Length: 247
Image (cartoon, rainbow, N blue to C red):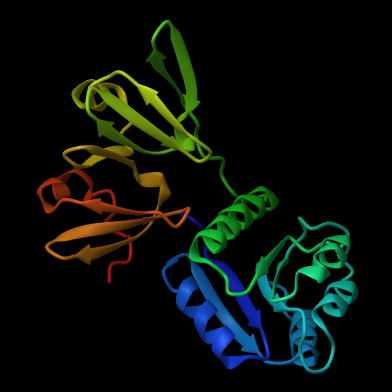
């Protein structure tokens, strides 16, 4: 089971905090521990809290500034816990932020896609920092493309969609085209790949949230992408997602 990320938000604008909280609410494995509207309270909390994973930190706040909080946190690497994600309307502080080991730098207004990518990167980094984290088994999958054969790690594949006589494999970084049928893929892919629509196979390892959508369902994936699922295929995935929060 994926561990819950413990998060704090520091921003002197109430609307900015509300907007960020709303965007983070779609991620079930994330808990907002507290929010602060000034740098002094933020730093004091961080100096006493030992289990915070992620800090969304504004640059310009009353009291001590965001960059100064980074400095006083005495980080020796951007990859040490907690990870700091700077959220600001000012591009000019980016160099200083990374110089003091910020993990990421987001410009306001923060897009859902950019936030999703930042969270995915943070989750990956934090999993590597956790000595107790069990490695996720990775299988190599072979796909023929003409005279060539593609070898892909199963965890890198998010979903596969039919497009005429071809199948589109959507990985974390690119889309690849193969000539194979849905039936053939279902017969040989690992069990985390399930058919959720007549033209879609989904890797359940990338599901963050499930919610009703009209008369069917909608999956939110780890990169923020939304995928529609037909009620007709619910039996394919319902058992494996019984513990996933639904809204």
